[in-house]
Length: 189
Image 1: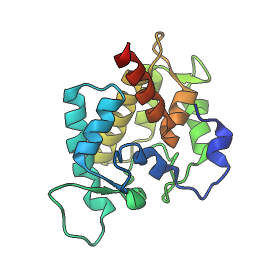
Image 2: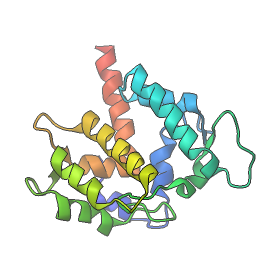
Image 3: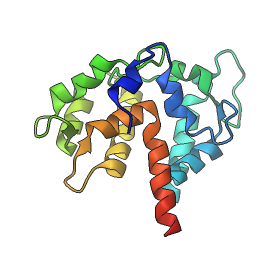
Image 4: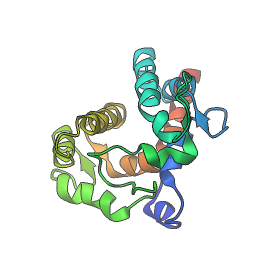
């Protein structure tokens, strides 16, 4: 798992790019829908979720990461421009340049983790989502809800808690690598 120091050592480094880079399966700086699908499958998601995710994610982010370019039917996401695709009604943990904002990360747990200071319950997660809503930002509401609910379903523990270190790891992208390794090990048994 990532530690807070690994995220704060270089504030200029774009951790949002690292978060997305996991899905760049051929490491060419571009994420196509089939790579998004492969990434979701690699972390243990089913075919249906992986299929829906690759369509919505690439459809929603492709053109935003390709400013000034003609839309592509291949829906590529350019990782170098991923901060341009940041949606509203989010937690603010990524700033407008894709950098990690430690105070915003801590704020999630200070404000919303009531039962356990280092984890969120399903109800606390819903409270977080409601508090981040910007008026009439329906796309942002949907994007935030979808991201957080998928994370919660995939990563909650047996007590229904989504732990702080897990959330931190999703922000820096290391969670996906860990999930891929765990899924691969389970498949090989």
